[in-house]
Amino acid sequence: MRKRLVAGNWKMNKTYREAMALFDKLNDAASSMPAEVDVMIAPPALYLTRFAKNSTKKIEVGAQDVSHREEEEGAFTGDVSAKILKSAGVRYAIVGHSERRQYHGESDEIIGKKIRACVRAELIPVYCCGEVLEERESGAHFDVVRKQLDTALSGFTAEELATLVVAYEPVWAIGTGKTASPEQAQEMHAEIRSFLKARFGDEFAEKVRILYGGSCKPSNAEEIFSQPDVDGGLIGGASLNADDFSAVIKAGF
Ligand code: 13P
Image (cartoon, rainbow, N blue to C red; front, side, top):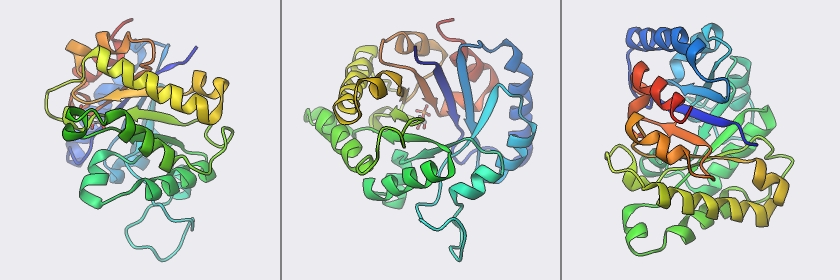
């Protein structure tokens, strides 16, 4: 049985004061969040230490990105290594978000290195994949996502990826208000699981958590999360409001 995970990706939002207010509200709501769900929030990097130190056990903290470099420390201005994140109490790192791919030219080779860095430092990698609208419309979406997984996860053993979380985020659904239908999410999640089964074996595929992301909100979360291969969500806009995020966490319970 896979434990559901609902993660909030705050992206480049919230001033320090606003972030603390939202964080406090979420901590207050933590006791009413279902025990059957893991909860993670990924605020702007600057706030990570503060959040990691002050969060209730229920709410874990993740980075939105991590350095791809092999070196754990060194002269790499602006980079934050997995080791540094880990030392500050961070548990997860999102890697390969489509906004990193789009605005920073990140390839699956680079993203694979970020996963490697997470594995080395024992951070839980949340690997994002997903097709753009033209790929969906031309029917190439399964091939695109398989190729992303194939490249980013190449060279890893099942053991190394034991904590891996995959997030399927169709790019056309991110921030657009247009959600994948529960059926579209389910069929892609099943495809991802079957890819992982062929690559890493049955046991791995049964255990790995696959999240859906893209305009997920209180009004649609329950239907999406009820699909057999959907193990929770990676939430953008709706994670910026404590009531909405709490409602998504509770969806289906
Ligand atoms: P939205 O929920 O705002 O569509 O963003 C999804 C996302 O990109 C989470 O990483």
